[in-house]
Image 1 (cartoon, rainbow over the protein chains, first blue to last red):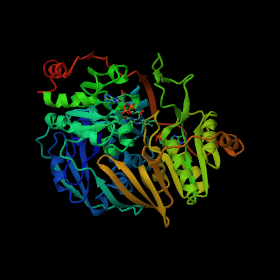
Image 2 (tube, helix red, strand yellow):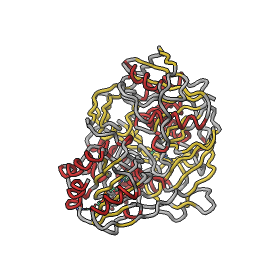
Image 3 (cartoon, each protein chain N blue to C red):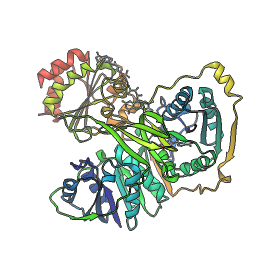
Length: 308
Length: 250
Ligand SMILES: Cc1cc2nc3c(=O)[nH]c(=O)nc-3n(C[C@H](O)[C@H](O)[C@H](O)COP(=O)(O)OP(=O)(O)OC[C@H]3O[C@@H](n4cnc5c(N)ncnc54)[C@H](O)[C@@H]3O)c2cc1C
Ligand SMILES: Nc1ncnc2c1ncn2[C@@H]1O[C@H](COP(=O)(O)O)[C@@H](O)[C@H]1O
């Protein structure tokens, strides 16, 4: 068996997901290759080569991969697919975007968002917003899967795998990058943070999210949000935690002014410790919180910042 | 311009599903079913494109048992023009759904197909991308904005780092995210009118698509339950507990 992992990166930095996927792949067993598809992404390849357990890093460095457009990247992965028993990508917006194309072109199913490996053909994944856990077995010749990185520990670093350059440049010509509006933040990324403090509709407006800043600074935390807070325009979409947003599992998750709808819980209920701050003592979030504090967030947040 | 909108009949988003005692699957008996919320957003977007004069016809298609006709009727009441029901009792993967949808695309030749990004039952997030691959079309997934001009569609996508806009040549595939629009409710007169709109029924096994899946569902179990913890009296107690009991802050 051999496994191809699609590296999660932004051309300059290898993201934390990749080492977690290597760990997931090691539970399947077999040689592990990592594919870096991007442009001017040599540093990413170097970082991938340092992950223990990686046999080879394949680098497709070309202009057509700069934005990792699904049409182009899937054509590349399909071309490389022969000989691999498993192809893995993180269940990020990049992996979710191109991997189903790979599966369809290989005429196999995709198994989305796996959280555990039972054997080389049997995998575990949440369905219905995590209210049910399915165990599925695939008889497809190549298993195309996205992996929920937060469910796996990271493989160790301190290795130096061989790096091989690929020359294939697949420009499908079906789509073109126009522009991007990326959130710039000094804080850790939501999916990589040890501590997250999230605000919901209870925050009332975007300005009030500043009340979370001081606490996040002191805890080295990322700031997240509920769908309601994003829909209302308080904060950008990339802060949404939940079934259809980002799935996180930090050491500490602090939910502020969030009621605890199943769609929100689906994104954070695997956090190690959950704190809920809400003025409604009946809010469902308290049913899953390790520590609940009933009260007005506008009183509690300044106090909490001062106490840390 | 013709728009095709695939809609899935799925559990209502307000329902918390339970697992069957024998762990064979979830229990959907007597559970409220609706149009998958992301498909509702897709229907709404198509209607807005028609209202703005960009689109001329909206065709909705649903694949599944007879009951799917309810969701097709709902989409017709919202403003779609006609429906196609691909009837099957089989449990299908996104791959088979995409193959069945491809037969509709081949026949109807829509300029744009708008799907939901994700069905909230399977949480697959695959079908639109697969259909795009099978039809060799460009895809704009997780859309929060769709703008059509000169045979192109510009799709603003919600991605992990923020927003990205791509431009696709029509025909193309779009999948919806939550911020694309806020779906309307169907008015009573429109619900009445929808009863007269045509729905074509096609048997899935009359199409040249292999409906057997290579993925077997071995077991569906309930997730590990988190037991609720304690209520703390004030900030001081909270901070003390996080430091000494949970040991998650220094
Ligand atoms: C298809 C679909 C997908 C979805 N995906 C997601 C998702 O990915 N993520 C997500 O989060 N949601 C998602 N949702 C939405 C979800 O169902 C809820 O609507 C949403 O999570 C509610 O957000 P909220 O808790 O911030 O708001 P509300 O439910 O309105 O709760 C606000 C809370 O703030 C409290 N509050 C108000 N004022 C104060 C105060 N001064 N002090 C303290 N507490 C206060 C209130 O008591 C209340 O509990 C999805 C829904 C659908 C249909
Ligand atoms: N049975 C179905 N009938 C019609 N459309 C479907 C069906 N299943 C999935 N889709 C479409 O594909 C989207 C994504 O579903 P999925 O890939 O299963 O998460 C849905 O929002 C629908 O637009």
